[in-house]
Image (cartoon, rainbow over all chains, first blue to last red; front, side):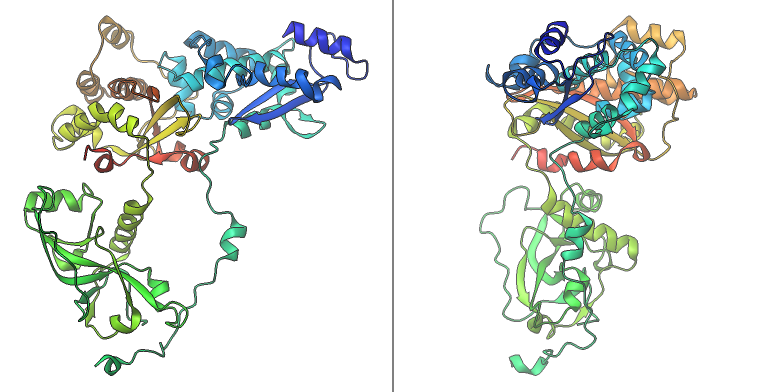
Length: 198
Length: 293
């Protein structure tokens, strides 16, 4: 993280990160269903720097052939990691479950040592890195920063929750449902002519 | 056509013939293939719509399942091919593998009676049709990976007196989630075992069992039947919740990585904890569909 921040800070004067390391703006990219958060400057809004942000926070390494080459490097998070992430972020168990994309009961299970699959393991690792971006002097303040609206609208927390949603399933929207033909019950069917077939 | 409804039993119309397979497989041998009537599958509102706008309906043959035990299992949903039509008797099913399309004009020439008698039966029948067509096409590797668990569930499901069998009866549905998705070269699978709303107590913090239970659990690798027995004998809500987590993990651990399936882990939730978001992203496991051909 440090090298990225240092390079970003040296590359721009208009969006310098504060001394405690919190970026003034946040780059958001949703690739492979995983939200990526990272400090953004004029130089990181496009090109190689943005790509680096994406790779760092999503694990999506397009240059080396894809998602799982990076995933293989992950270390399975222990119960300690889960508890540390919660303590550092100030999130409640419910909030942690939302950003992880599972139930509170599942996160409780992880905290009690239940197995975590590769994808969730990697997501938790990336979440921990994203939370570090917002690290403040206390968990409450960190949580406040995570929940504060960004200049672009939703808070980092909200964007993390959105990115945790499954992308494979979608129901019909109300608009789609409204465009469906209305059900019309016909009182008398005009073509019921029993004798006609004989 | 206002008097017609989904699930109606309709006298077999002239001009409609359901062919019978020349060679019956073992699976087909327990069903009388010659239909005695047809069952209306089309949704009731669509049946009632003007025949000018919607001239066709779908029907399936009404067949008899000859073996009483198999009929019982079919009524319980063991074979998605057969949708129970309660008013036709305990052995009467719509064969959803042999759906045909006929005109409403032809339908109107035939006597009919209602096959479903109340809203519960209507809902169950509609659900059976949805289930037959909706089942997600999981990768073959998942079928192979889940085979030990499938066999286990089928073995224990019929034994409500065994602790594991009793707990399996509390599982309302198993849903599978893939990360990143089923089409990728490496898939992480989350099996979500859904219990009735409120079946487990909700805790603010991770529930902890008594130290004796923790020691027992960590003293050796615990098998599902041992964990189930412990759950059945415990009256401590925190311990039960903790043990359920270990039980579904033990069930999921029976699934071997296979092909694109990198790993399978378990999760237990109550129905009121499983969000619509997750419902949209996951797919129900259908054990019959997962069985080897």
